Image (cartoon, rainbow, N blue to C red; front, top):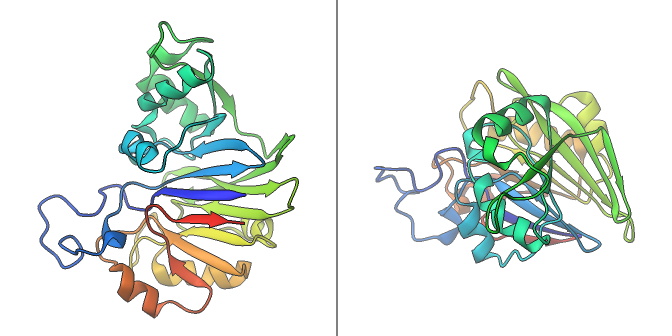
Length: 259
């Protein structure tokens, strides 16, 4: 299994507009963060999770040439506004609609934002078409399984995802945009080789886990490696990496995991 971190930043991205702080003016490329999303390749199956506003640039940068289906964790702007750029992958699917798995809230947001894309096929070559399906608790595929669990994120629930590749048995958990990780989600992620957790900033936040809260959850899951994502400009990559306990590290745009 391969996991490609297309983006690891918060809803405002880093550098922040009109900010001259040390992180926003840093020359360290690890501090250049586009909005959070990942691309998972599981026994040749290509799954995109979320569509940041920078999706087009992210896919060009990481040479993403295939997308078999798409998972939207929730309908917030930093995860959904890049979906129009999925039109290219409809072309690459032979002009067919791209399957989109999401929550009921997510489906409502896609319908509201992309009514022109609700079709079995694009209205013309180069247009997007989406086939909306409610994400099940367990999606069984020839290449493995994708399990989902709901995570609290302010006034809505976001999808936490656990991928298990059939050929290797490798397991990977992705829990972004959440204020906490309930016991059932902790249990689902146990046994994963790598886990990704929301860890917005050092300070507490009403809808996201702080760095300290993410570390507590990392210890509960006890994966060999935990990566922190959805990072703000309050986190300098090198300083954060040096402060984290063994087995926990800040993710960065362009990071690739081979599991």
